[in-house]
Image (cartoon, rainbow, N blue to C red):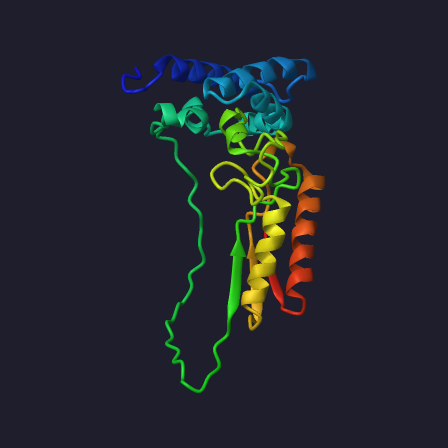
Amino acid sequence: EIPNYVKPRYCLLCRVAIHTLISTFKQLKQVPQQLKPGMMQVTQGLCRLAEYPKEYCADLINIFIDSIIEILQTNDHITSHDICALPLGPIGCVQEPTGASVDPVKLDDFNFKSTVSVAYNKTWPTKILHITDIHYDPKYVGGVESEEVVKQCKKMFGCCRVGNTGKPGETYWGNYNHCDTPKTLLEASLKKIAEQHPDAKMVYLTGDLVRHHITELDFETLKADTDYVLGLFIEIFKDIPIVFAI
């Protein structure tokens, strides 16, 4: 019974499909290779229920199909309610309590003691720059994707990267509401920060560094993007120490 859901049939369909998959996979010690195409069709269909684009669902499932199978086979507590709540939560298919016990996490006992530090007038202040959430997109060229093109874009995450030379300066610095960070914006921003804060003693660089085109990401692209961003920081901030955390 699902009386309060916006699209109850979608929720019911998802739960029935996932319950069937869980039951089937738990009976198999190893999923035969010939079952994967059918599994991919089912999961892509469930992805489409969440109204994600067809191409996005196909790419996403293709990347994570082995991980999905592993989770379904090895997690003894997972239910169809748990899984369907993730993609279909916005339409009200929220998780319901299953009553399954969760193993407690044992934490060591620490003897915490609070301390008070006093800053004296004769001490010199230290300036630390904290730069975060770069979201660098090497394929997005600032200035070639207009506002009009952005509004017509049907891609779920990130820019469509459709060239438009009608107004090349319109989005030279990127598009805040839709796109990740183009190279033009990243380089100019870091140079301006370095110019305005030459007395900085340290730079904290924290994630997220990666683009939102998650279906493009693998070890090679992640390493290439990270190497470029970190190299740019080292080049622009020169001798200032950089504390890097992904």
